[in-house]
Each structure stands twice: as C-alpha cells, then as structure tokens.
Image (cartoon, rainbow, N blue to C red; front, side, top):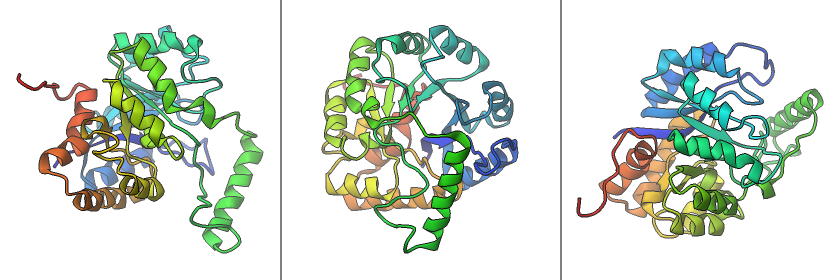
Length: 293
C-alpha cells in the first residue's frame, strides 16, 4: 500500500545550524522509502531552514518522492511572495509560530493566492512541542531527558526566547479561513492538538476542504483511540497521515499506525484513504470522485 506523508521537516543539525543538510536529506529519502513512504511533503525554508533557493536545489534530486512545501512567515510573505515560491517549484505552504492569529486579515492575501494556485496549506495547531515531553519523562529521573534539557537551554541562549502562542494557532481560525476561501485545501496538524480536539472535529465536520493530519506522537495517538477521533468524531475522508518525527523514528511511527488501524477494525478502503488517497487528492495526484459519478 502506498503511503503519503504530509508532514516531514527538512532536516537540520540543531547543534550546528550552519551545516549544509544535503547529506541528511539523502539519508532521509532512504529512510522514508524504507519505511514505505512513497510520497511526502518536505517542509522547507522559513526561519529555521535553508533558503528557499537552496532547499529547491537539493530537492530537485528527489522530485519523485518529495513535494516541496514552503514554510512561510505571513508577516513577510504576502500573495506576491506566495506566487514567487510557486514559480520556484513549491507546491504547498506550512505555517507555524505566527505573530498574530492565523485568521488575521493581513494574512488573507497569502491565503487567497494559495487558493488561486491550488497550493494546500498545512497549519500547525496548538502548543508547539520541543525536545522534551514532560508528560512521559523529566530531567530529574532520566539522563537522556537531562541532556535534552541542557540542549534546549543552550539553544535558547543562542536564539533567544520565542514569540509564540498556542492561542494564535487554533482550529477555530481554520473555520474563518475556510469560509473565506472555500476552495483552499487546508490541513490542521496533530488532530488539532491537545485541548483542541473538539474544535478540530467541529471544523472538519462542516468545512469541506479542511482536513487534519494525525501526527504528534504517542500521546496524540492514544487520544485518537480513547476519544474515537478517527472515523467517529472526525470522518475517515478528513484525515491524513503525517510523521513529523526524527527520521529514525518514521518506521516505528508507521508500524504504530498500522497497529492502530487494526485495533479500529478499519477496512482496506478506509486504510487506503488514510495512508494515501486523501492526501493524494489534496495535492492533486488523485482525482476526487463523488457518489453516483
């Protein structure tokens, strides 16, 4: 079965951010393909990535596997900027860590151009994660967690504190955007993220072109089962697969979802939609069909 991963980040050496990541992209392509990924959105550029030009130069070697998706700051990338990115070869957009709410009127020009160019937009939802999940570990009892904490402190010293807020990245903002741009294909990350599941389900329920990816790690996967988010609260046609993890974790991520689909008793058609077809339709690789056609 083909797998479409809508949420893979361009790799980066966070300890040495000036290092060219092209060799890591080579390895990521091998690891993803070995895990069964047949098409993936590579989220490229932005504040913490390579330049858009360098990203496209590297990704030219992997056009059969990776779809270039530009990470943008809508404070500086407007409709004209989106059109320039499209001309460079980017076929989607990603937003995260915005300075204002996703549905801020000043951002709408970028969304309008994305709709005109059929560029799907992936929006991060909710709290931004980090290198240390305190719900499952703590530096006081785990040496690896202690090392991760020290790395986080060192990074904060280098780049300074972040001006981010989960309140600016709510699924409810996607409702505003979808109403304004009904043909814009929108993906909210992480099933809306913790605390937002009901909002995500409500928006997906009523807005035709709003979807949610199922990335976010084992806590969100557990919630997906416990709260019946897959196929009950959020319809099968409204969900897509995303890994959003370190490259060496992709295989385990795929395996966990296969086990989850078994527990849910999903049919082959439902699995095919979640693994491939929904995302392929969003990105124009499959033609959507309606009942009776």
